[in-house]
Image (cartoon, rainbow, N blue to C red):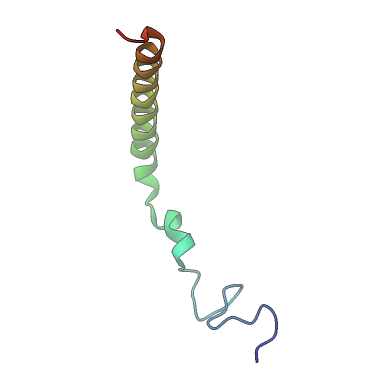
Length: 64
């Protein structure tokens, strides 16, 4: 039996893993792509807000 916290392939400070785990994807994004990501995030947030406003208007309209 294994003790508590014993995991195969360890995650913390394991030199074999090289710091490339499933939770490490953002570090693979090249720095030049960040402004594009932020711009896309802004556009998607605005679109989501517009859709939410439209939904709220439909809900307030009742049976219209």
